[in-house]
Length: 165
Image (cartoon, rainbow, N blue to C red; front, side):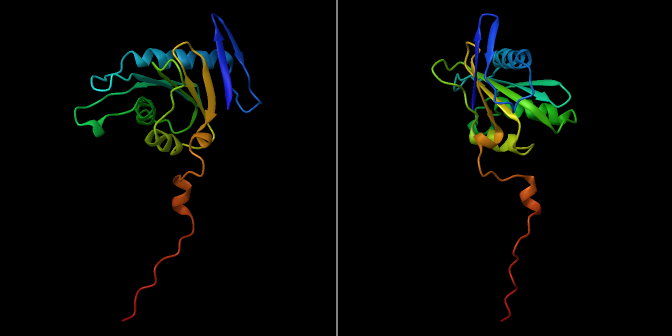
C-alpha cells in the first residue's frame, strides 16, 4: 500500500515500482473522482461518492453513486464508472480513484464494488482518497485477497455421480 500526498501544487509519490502512472495522471484521476462526487444522487444517505476510471489506452470514465428509495437498487460510483466504460467497449483498466466527503479516513469500496472491479482483473490500481487530495494506492488483489474471478469458472470441477437406485 503506497501513500500519495498533495501539497498545493506539489505531489510526493512513494512507489516501489509497481505503478506506471505519472503523478500528474494520479492527481487528475483523483480530481475527476472529486468532481464526479458532486453529481452524486444521495438524498437518503447523504454520502456522496465519485469515481474516475482509467482504461489501458488512457480514456477516463467517471461515475457517482445513485441512490433509490428501494435502497438495494442504488448504484455505487465505482460500478457506475465501470459500467459506463464497459458499455463503450472497454474491458481492461489501469486504475480507479475513489472520492468521498470522509475527512478522517480514506474512502474504501464496498464488497460488491471490490468483486465488480475483480471481474476485470486483480492487478490494477485503486486510489482511495480524502477531500484534501491525499490518497492511498492499493491493488484490486489487496482489496479482495483470495478472490473469485472469471478464470475460476473454467477450473476443473468434480461433478456428482448420478445415484444408481
